[in-house]
Each structure stands twice: as C-alpha cells, then as structure tokens.
Length: 307
Image (cartoon, rainbow, N blue to C red; front, top):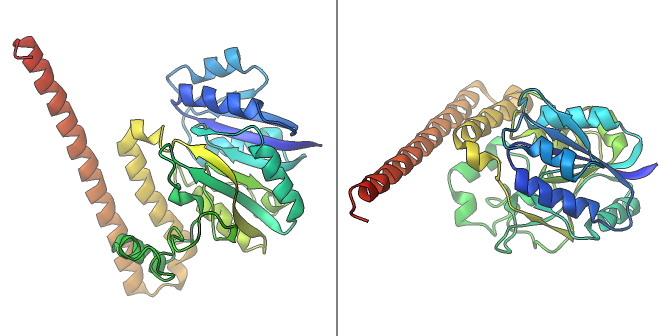
C-alpha cells in the first residue's frame, strides 16, 4: 500500500502546476501516486502534464465542473487503497520533506481524520484560511460586520480565521484549507465524497463538518509549512469566482443552519448574503471597467504621440 494518493485540480495555471508537480515528485521518503484533473484549461496545462510529468495520471475533463467535481473524479479513479489521501492545489509548492512529515503526523494521531499544514503566502505571512471555524450565523455576522478585523485577538469576534491562536501551535480546529487537505481514507469512506453542488468555495468546509460529525478530529499542524500563492486561477476569472463565493455561502447556510434558524433571522441572513454578493459583483465590474478605461487611455496616448 502506497503512502499517498494526491489529487491536483488545475484550471488555467500552467506554470504554477509545473512548479507544484516538480515539488511533489521531488519529495523524499514517501511512496505516492499523483492524479492531475484538468478542468478544461485553455492554457496548455494538460499538454504540460503529458510532456513534462508523464508519471502523473492525467484526467482531462471535457468541461469545468468545479473544484468538488474534479476532485471527486480523481478520488474515484485512484480509489481508497492508500494510507492517506491528499487534495493539493496547483498554486502550492512543497519542501522536500513536507509530505513525509505530514504522513508521520497522521501515523502518530489515529484519531485525526483531516490535517492541514501552515500555509504561508509569498510575503511570508500566514494564509488565514489555513485554520477556520465553521461560518455559523454568529461567526459569519462577526466577519461581515468587520468585528473580526477590529478585534482579531478576541475569542468571540476572531473565530472566523481563529486569529487569536498562535500560528505556530498545533490546534484542533473546525476546518483547514482545501489547498492542502490530508485525509484518512476511512473518514472519507464514512462521510462520502465532496458535495458537487459547491462549484468553487465551501466544499472543504462542508466536508470537514461532515467528517467532524463522525467524531474524527480536524487538526491544524504548523510542523509542516507549505507555500501558497493563492487565487492563481480565480484571479483570472474574478467575476465567476465572486459569484460562486456568495452562492457557496448561501448553500452552506441552507444545508447546515437554515433548519435550526428562526424564519425572520433566516430571511435576514439570506438577504444579507445576497446583498453582499451584489455589492461584490458591482465592485469587480467597476474595477474591470476602470482597468479597460485605463488601458484604453494609455493606447490613445501612445497613438497620439503623447507618451
């Protein structure tokens, strides 16, 4: 039995995917199989995998069915005959011993169903998504009202990203980021695959909640530190990504909290999510419009000889 089955979902991040695969295949002291699921990229990602990384199993999806859909394709293809399963984003880069240390942690903690490492941004800062609480109505309200930003050290208001915790201490949490999510196969068999109604966001939170409900622990483990460039794909498709973020927020609430929320509060929460979504979409549109306007003015200046 090999140590790891690694599923990497790629969408228009060819260069980052190449870096990620190089780091994966450069890992020490682990046996692994890698499955790259290409979500109908248009940048030659699939050709790169075939040409430069033929040891990886490549699945070319004929359409972009979303993150959960693509990961499930990989999980079904590789199966559960491994010691551990790893969902890994293509915009991550691993150190040579990161996988071995992750496997060793899971070996020493049989009660853990999911482990996530310390995710570090390019500037060395912590990726706050590395450890999170579930977005209950109260936690989501603190976040949307800006209280989590004003009082990051508060155990009440800082629960969304657990900003009151020491980033260098191991902690049991509600959820870790799907960018690097190491799972025990038995926990996945018991909970089932990712919910494909979530297109881009929220599927990792939903999975963690389902697995925790089966009495498995979810642990943030900073003994492994992984570089995460973050949003490499969604940055290129901001309108769709913004739309899906708020759709996933609404879906998560309806799936897990709506039934136990009073009707007036339920309507207020859904209305707030919808309003925030509209405002976010408008912001993206305005920024896009200003960008087009800016480049048009530069082109006009050049053509008129002003620059």
